[in-house]
Length: 236
Image 1: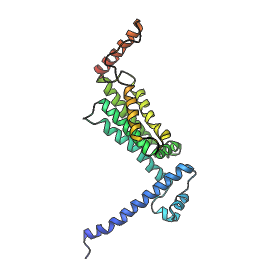
Image 2: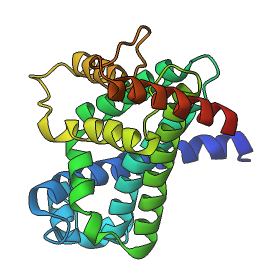
Image 3: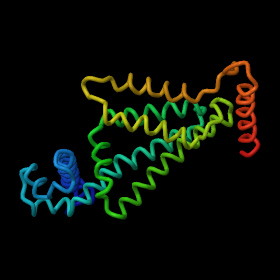
């Protein structure tokens, strides 16, 4: 008689092997997409890289779109979830949240730069449903970072700037890492710390401010910043 536990035990190797093969297919596909482009890579190319037949490949994946969908979910979806979680942490103030968001983004870009570059290059080739999901993830990231900057402005830690513009700048600075970072040459942790410091320094409100000059225009500029800050507090 075969018990339930023995049945499950017999199923595990098959499931584990399928996951291993699917991951191997994914890695080969990412490499080929990066080398030849999404349009220039066929399922036969992927099968050849794996040393299997095309019918055998169909057992694991039905189309290139499936592989591109996994890339979009891993890259854009993973970033959106991680940043949203950091933005919601109760143990960090706005400065701490922004630091962790920048660090996380930089380290993700530095550890897998080819995947981020590939996704950007493949945006125009995403099918409609993936385009919609990809856009939603990008908007979620922007909303989270904007919210953190707004939080810092209300708390008086950040200058009363346009939070959305500031968020776009912070995100763009991190996203550019995938294009210049050289694994094995650049230090990912050092780059993450430096860019986090840069992002925060550009937003921090000075503790002791002095006008740019002695004229009334400079004094009015500081006063307008204070009024903007007050309006944000009252309106929150």
